[in-house]
Image (cartoon, rainbow, N blue to C red; front, side, top):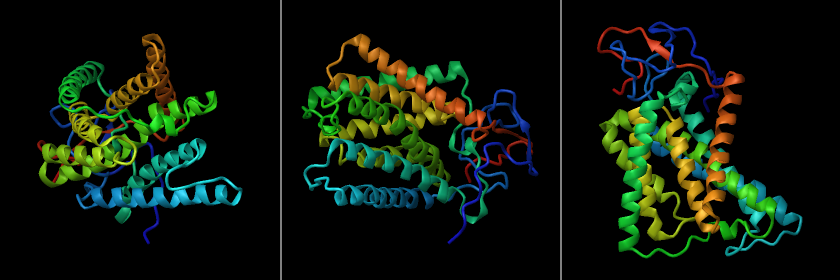
Length: 318
């Protein structure tokens, strides 16, 4: 089995890669942000087959990790059935699943000796104006679709937060909010937009990749969301791919994902508008602090500027 290569937050010096651009974007020779599929410093793109492989391995790792958490709990006398998992244990299982998604993406990204850099997964700065425009357009488009879908389909109330025990204790409420509004957006975007969408657009371009990624994104929520909500989730997944394509950064995707989850969380908990706004701001602030900590630790570094001939790209799909 190939041994994972060390994660390098800052790009290695390599032929064809020059110093990072001032704004941190990978840039084409013409100066436009590079939003095609990422390649490593050696010019090798992630092949499309890695996308489904990473998803399957991520789900398998999540199942195995869940067993690692659940078996000791059973040994300690915790009652677990097919219809009921204690809230605290369910939160732990879901957190393990999110971690498994990241590990699967990292594993496949480094196969064949490929170097790993944070910017390849979209962890690079985004221009504020471009990001706000993308977030506004995607947010409005999703809201319009959601209103039309809700008028046509009467979905049952989502039961996920009840199973997480949000109304049983303050601790479970806080942990559920952190899981739903912070951890899930980060880990799911890392796998679905940062890796799966990026690998698939090396195959038939960004539009088909966005459709496939959106459908898969909706499908993986089949166990936690009502069936009628899977279509809106697929649409959200598709729009998040377009946001990533337009901005060249995963940060706006994480922000929009967190915003959606926070609003849904506050709505299901029947919170006031003020409390919901505090949740949104708190979740985004925590995500920002996590990103800042990773930057300070050197895990996330600037993306390199291209030093290739005009029309070439060491990241572009091919």
